Length: 172
Image (cartoon, rainbow, N blue to C red; front, side, top):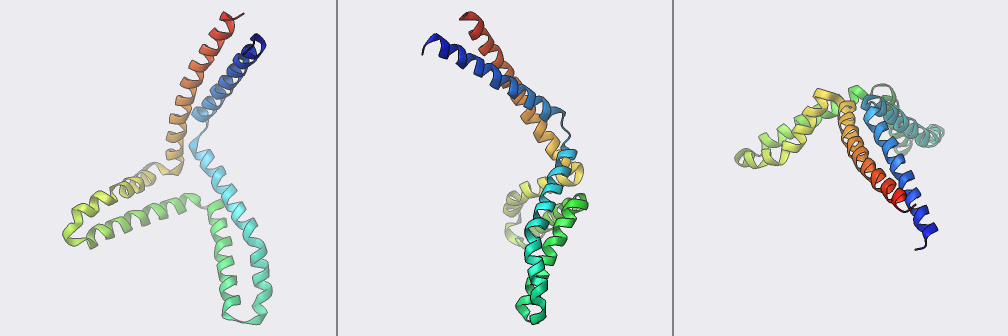
């Protein structure tokens, strides 16, 4: 590799490490609750947007008065309502899902009867996940995950930045 390519490679390394530092800082500083709200709103809008044509068609097909027409209308309506719930009441939805996960896990343990201890071991991750979501919410979980990823990215990018900078200065 000639000198010009090596210098270009080192400058690219500096640029990539600076981008990594900026992204790491964003991950650390960004609130998980805000990110969760944004993600749920985007998902809800996409669900509604993709279901709307089928919903409109199912309304047109209702004049046939067949079970298929009614079921298509009901399915599209439920999907649109789900999208609206994701947009406006996603916190309640995550609570409901967490409670359901907890209830179903406990039912599986109780139904196992003689091998309940083995089933308990299998259900512990689901129970822990449900309890964490109930205690700190989905935004709190995202906040923790973003912080961990952000700090790792900050450390690795900073190390890469220093190495790239030393290599660039040394070869000048």
